Amino acid sequence: MSNDLFVQETHLIYRLVSDETLLVNSISNKWYRFNQVGALIFEHLKEPSSIKQVVDKLSDEFAFDEVSPEELFADVSEFVQYLLEERVIRPESRPAAPKGFIRVDDWRDELDAVGIELGIPTWAKIELSTACHLHCAHCYIPAPERSLKRELKVVRQEKELSDDEIYSIMDQLADMGCLLLTLTGGEIFLKKSIFDIIRYAHERGFVLELFTSATPLTPDKISALAELNIGRVQVSVYSHDAKIHDDFTGSAGSWARSVSAIRLMAEMGLHVELVCSIVPDNYQDLIRIRELAESLGASCSYGYPITARTDGNPDTHSLRLNKEELRHAIFAVPNFFAMPEPKAKTARICPAAVNMCSITSSGDILPCSQFNLPAGNVRDGQLAEVWRNSPIFSKLRSLRMEDLKSPDGAELPGYVGLCPGLNLLEEGDFLTPAAITVETTRAVMDVIEDPSVDEEIHYRLTHPDETRMRSES
Ligand SMILES: C[S@@+](CC[C@H](N)C(=O)[O-])C[C@H]1O[C@@H](n2cnc3c(N)ncnc32)[C@H](O)[C@@H]1O
Ligand code: SF4
Image 1 (cartoon, rainbow, N blue to C red):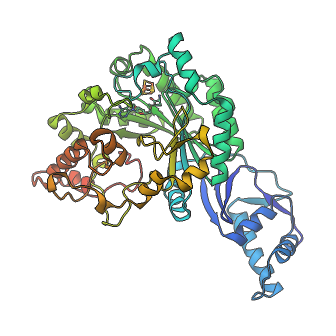
Image 2 (tube, protein in one colour):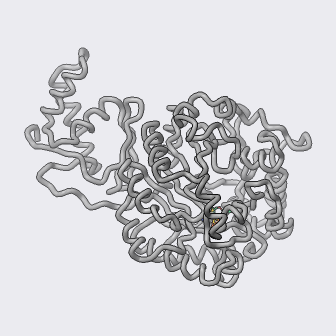
């Protein structure tokens, strides 16, 4: 083995962050974090190298005073063996392994933990455009900003990020250690340059998450996506019933197009998640929607509550559930509404500005896409500068659960769906829990405290899913 040559596998996604390497192996969908020496060994295997060559290079770079040459050789051999077993490297004589498919959810917690520990945005979101061809009743983007009418399109395009600006943001994020990039809209696949943008992100070593209605996706486009580092495609579907969905999106035929795209993406191996905002039109069908997702080979998650529009217009509140409807939904999908473990008083409220940030289509830098508190604009300077020095981001990083103002002086064991961004939108203050959050939490507690409630429902409401999206399964 000592003279054999080894080389990195082809389908690896990695970032060097503070002397460490974060790596996702898209052959096996496994996540790794290599320390400084591990990162160097991995780096030296970019070119075909023997263990002896790697040891020689390491010895030039480090003074291994405490380790004899024999021990160093044995340690490197052991690590190389490990990398071989994990299919991170291969013997040079063997062909590269074929690309597999990545599932972000399988290593997202680890990615978040690194971001929190190192103080870097390991996850970022870019809103590419607010344009959309659908007319969903609940859409938080105000209708004029979505409109494809010529005169409104001209106004929008004047404000929106150009492709070059999007590439520059990606470059900056990559340099900051960001590995997971979510692209959202509007409808991202209406953008003429979308495949250039996705390919650029792929080349810059991001794992991508795409939020879309999937209606513009043709089989050719789906085949192209399957070749790239897509870790999840999240597709919004509001009913198992085509008519209910089409009425909600205001677009005849949209259900059929979304559903056939989901089926094809799943057949090609992409991780697709069907996401359904819970509204009065579908709260009775939540299990059937999950069954639809399963039949298509997709996972399923839900969204609640419907928020006001980004211009503050609360007309969308009419799409929230009343008390009885909410109770029905809680019984139907208890995992989604599960009461989170109460957080310690000194725990952080949420990851906004801690290990994530979001860029709007006009370049504003937000702590999170739902937190409309711009810390700067990418057109005014470097993203890294804002990330490090923004007083808003610093303030958010310092927030702890004990800083929240308790509603009506009442103590709640935890909050279902607590979100400082929603607090700001609804209450004008990110530390005052939104009334809808308190209402939802109380509705869940009522069910938990009801002695006549079935044991399984009780169990599911009190044992929150470990997964971030609280998928109902
Ligand atoms: C704005 S859309 C953009 C991506 C794509 N057009 C889509 O619909 O999936 C992102 C997600 O936000 C959800 N959404 C839109 N308006 C909302 C609102 N007022 N409250 C909560 N979720 C909303 C949509 O259902 C969708 O899942
Ligand atoms: S498809 Fe997405 S962006 Fe378009 S109207 Fe619906 S929610 Fe809004």
